[in-house]
Image (cartoon, rainbow, N blue to C red):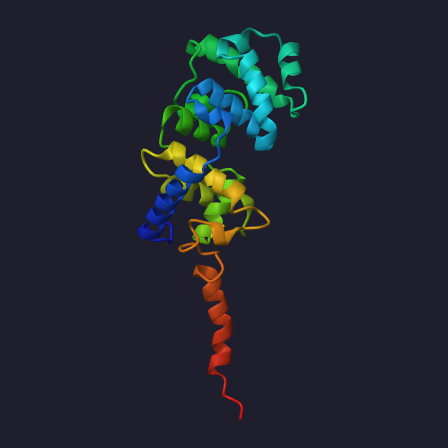
Length: 241
Ligand code: SF4
């Protein structure tokens, strides 16, 4: 897909987002490690649960099952008990089954290949991208609801026209904008910005590091052009006496 935005806008997006993340990124327990197992556990827990709620569950779970081997050897009722309170138990079942497959088929090491990792239960395109970029340093993009919102607003991507089409457009944009060699920080940065500043209902544009180039920020880009085009007819109307 050809992106209508210039390379300059793209580079500004990458540079400002990464600089903001270095100073303001959230300090989360799973960000102290690059261990693929721990990154995977956090990503599975975060699939349907808020960050703040996941923290305590994550700590408890990796204390009880610190490796794929230990999780694979546990029986299902024990895993279920460790997941109690987090909800969506299918995630725990998938994670448990994944641990068993990693041990049986991959010698206890999570594969670092997109096709292989996506064949494991409960791992979709987003989770694969997150694990591959954060744990293995691969140049893989991600697209969750936070990242999708930031990309759509910043680049002025139309979000009408069918969910599948919009998702396809945003995935292509995410792939294009993810900077080579910095995908881990960049992916975490875009999710953090979407969670803390470019929020769904209230975008704190005044605090946003991207506001100068953003097509949706008040007074710039699309918003400004929309206002200007609304004003134009009045300016050209004959002045009243
Ligand atoms: S300037 Fe506003 S709309 Fe644009 S990315 Fe930042 S918070 Fe979101």
